[in-house]
Amino acid sequence: MDILKIRERCSNCNTRYRMEPSFFFGAMYVSYGVGVAFSVAAFIISFLILGLSLTTSFIVIIVTLIIFMPFIMRVSRNIWINLFMNYDERLAKKQDSKDRV
Image 1 (cartoon, rainbow, N blue to C red):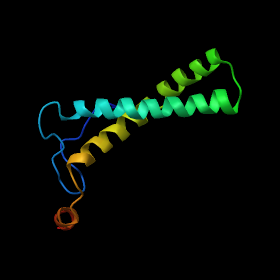
Image 2 (cartoon, rainbow, N blue to C red; image 1 turned 45 degrees about the vertical axis):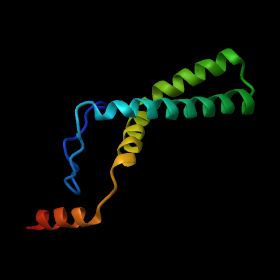
Image 3 (cartoon, one colour; image 1 turned 90 degrees about the vertical axis):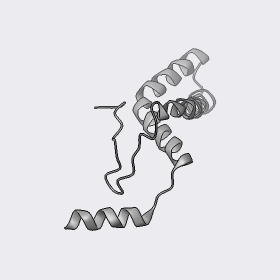
Image 4 (cartoon, rainbow, N blue to C red; image 1 turned 90 degrees about the horizontal axis):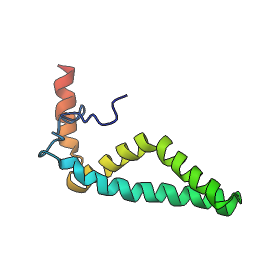
């Protein structure tokens, strides 16, 4: 599983993902926010809803972050790139027509 691997171009519309070196370092900031959201959700579920102790809730938060790390990384990258790029249907159709030939 290549969690850190980023494709050079979109397979659908051929958009170049690597705009500049280190572009996805900004996704680390988004990842922090997404991780905090997962942590808060894990705390609310474990401590407030299930009534577990604080120590157990802390362990649940750590386990949740470890298990969902690949998902958090991918979602963060998607959020980050979508802040700068929009989906262009014309490019997707152009690429699709090239693939059929």
